[in-house]
Image (cartoon, rainbow, N blue to C red; front, side):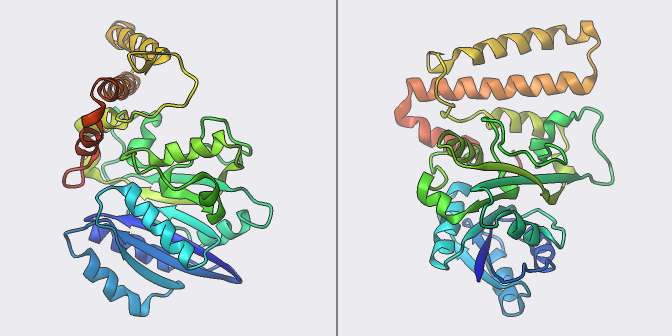
Length: 322
């Protein structure tokens, strides 16, 4: 019998987590597959622990395991889940978030994709569910990642482009993959899924985009502000990691300076060109993300001793928002 783990990391979102677990518990278990649901509480101070313990006795889908990771940071929680799944003898690990809704066949589709000849790593589609207020006029499709969306279309892509990495809300991997390439980087407080996916690509692992692995991310109306999107974009750039092979100046790849210059000029000329509001705001977010990258690289280059603490302090959410 195969053993499949679902790993959910959470921090101070007990109400959202309850909705996610209700959706997860209503799924069908694949045939001849034992399901282990691992919820990793990443140092929550709300009633997450109490709610999880109350769910355990009557949990309907396999077994529900409640873990606690005291080190603040999703990368630590993810790796705690992987270590426990290894102890349980799980063959395949499915990672998702604490604010997701699932179709009844998500696990069945995972089992079908990860047969004897399937990939080592796969990412699926994450569709967005907008609140009653709808999507803002300034929203552009390129901003989907800000609110948790990921959609490369309805066709399977295998092999994927070299720069593809599955998003963490819908990422599935064989346990053996972590033995070969290592766990999620604990130096990354943001984009640990991107770094992991590109590390797998660089080592020649089989990576697939699989649209049948489709989930839904409800969009919280509280994040639909330009301020939130701007802060998300800047903090998305806070990383000292880059794909290898780029020529650099002062610790920053030369192509990043060029992109910063091009988008700065384009943003300034936008009103003269009558650029649509959504396209101009998308350009502004690219600028902010680029500036976050440059600022982060300069910081790591000129002040390496304080860099890790600086990134940790500036990467975390406050009261659930950036």
